[in-house]
Image (tube, rainbow, N blue to C red; front, side):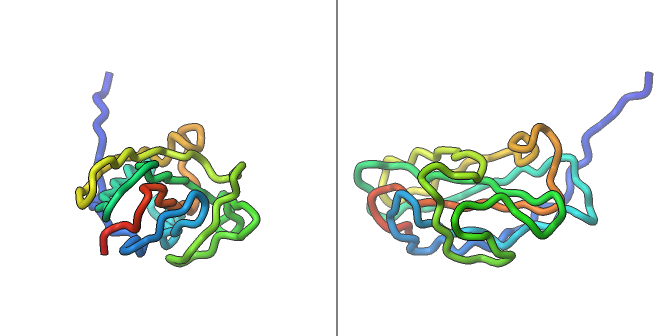
Length: 143
């Protein structure tokens, strides 16, 4: 029986302007869409490193995942997701996947969370994907 091994690609930065993102239960920021149509990776591990500003109750960030089978039509709520880093309002009952909750109880601290993207799509990577961060920490994120 032949042995198989996992091959890792190069870590790549994803644009998502979270500096000073205001506290909200629904208004967040979407990243620039990640295109998987050429590489066809089996999975992607998203590492989020977010620094809090001054926090108060509640103390969490909600991370939502979205994808597209055809590269054009994305999971979406009332607002349509675009291809670039932009503000996005998540519906209370959202069509996005998640949320993944990042607990962040301390002010001025970096919190990190690693998320498997394929796990949100039944183990199959979408052609294009991205994420939305909603800051529910009680204060703005660090600049």
